[in-house]
Image 1: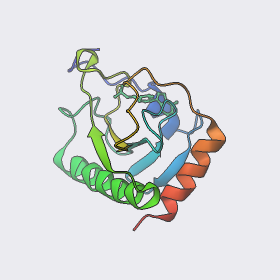
Image 2: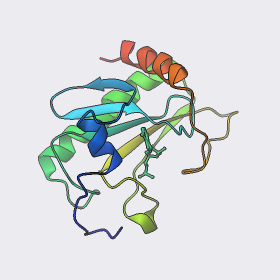
Image 3: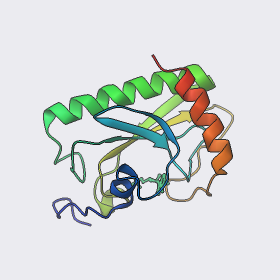
Length: 145
Ligand code: AMP
């Protein structure tokens, strides 16, 4: 997918937003959905997306929606770090196929990191157990501001 192609309304995150496929939600409001990555690169890997923007990547989102998403990334990172006490965390965001993006609805990854646990590679992590993801999501949600 090029950086400037048309938004595909049938991408997997659009389907999650429409409730056509399930997700393990951490939190949501009118503008934002934060949910567990099903192929987590580390325990507690959360994805943050806009409900109001159909930007494929960082280039296409308007400033107001971007401000809402970045505030949501910070809110989510605070909850993840409170809930799971990692040694650090990574915020990742990929643009275009050549940039490592695989789902073409703009999203930010919040990935907790531990000094003694290597992070799994992007696109190379095994699928997580959904019940384990639900437990993690509840723990993170309980730590939200
Ligand atoms: P990216 O490669 O940056 O576009 O990230 C897409 C992310 O979506 C990857 O980390 C995938 O593991 C994740 N992913 C793909 N399908 C789903 C799904 N159905 N539910 C949750 N996460 C997903």
